[in-house]
Image (cartoon, rainbow over all chains, first blue to last red; front, side, top):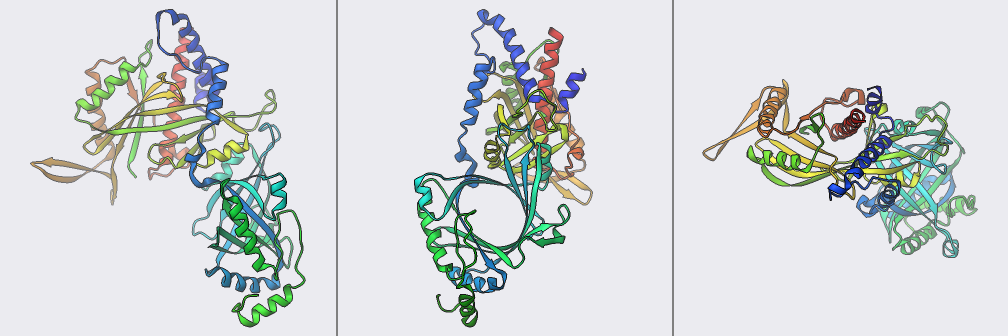
Length: 285
Length: 242
């Protein structure tokens, strides 16, 4: 009886389900001669394995737009030139900026969980009236000679909106907080050969756990600029081209490169910023 | 959102569930003037933890369930019953779980069958079968009732059609209304002398932090709960026999 109670509490259900199927199948095997019924496909380990394989070959297309690749480049700019960058972006994109306040939590699996360690990000959009949570998994970057030659990083990315107890879920599943940060800035979303998003934000760290009201910049005076665009295995070359050509317009103010490849600030930034500020972005650089 | 009751078939001691019972239950829905409205299907998957070292004690659960509901296949629900936790996500969370490789889907169950309309009730009768198999593991029934809020709290809207004129009226209490329908249904089933009955054990939604306002998360918790009960029943039957 206590076994049943424990099971009802939810511990080891999958195993117990399998075990109960095995018991039943043994019983059925003894009746095999008298019955031509088709038995469970969970009767032994080999069929379990077969089923596991089938399950892993789920048709991911049905999961919609959550799975995709993304093209990304990053750069840095001094905070004093951010206003000029905003004027330039406004002129280039023809859309208004959106404010951005995102609390990002990076979680890592505990040592014994998973055959390899794994990492997942929870993003909490603090601009919404009710904080909105998203789970994001960033996969490996595309490799090979072709990927080396292009100036944009192409990687897989999966995202899912999730209810506000997502952090509790991942803690329960055996993930621990690795670090957290607060991005504060603005973003432009627009269509230019691809669905491009440009974010300009300062990266802040929290002095106390989750204390987003009490955050201080990690690199005072410097902001991060990120240009991303969703892509798929069919169209990524066009998306890379669109992102690269867009980046050229920003070149006088900042250099954008693959994440992890630091290019520093641009020497021409001060002059370019001064020119933009004087004519309000009316002329192309 | 309408309230749902999810029930599962409890076979009498010494009997097991079979397809004959399923077909009798479906006939029963038609016999009380249920109008067939098509098919439905929900899926429940067991995610099993991939522990590197099996022998040491872990501070994560051995498994949890993921549920895709017929009402909203673009949503996905994760339930850890031991911790009374239900999380609502988009279906792409399945892709993320797959990529993390910390939990793997081992077994998936389909709940599928016909849907009937009976006045203001919607009734679903379905079989429980492992994915990629036709072997019957159980029978479920979903009852859906349409409510709206009044100043006295939730009430049921009932309609009566006389000479082609529809009249709508408000039923006072949900429970009595649901009870009446349930009695009618149980009576119809009793006449067939089937070796078992439908049981409804409502999970404690408050423990999951769910509000009184019924949601798909309530439905997901009910599915996780009846699946555990079905497994427990099949195990205790085995235990008695051995």
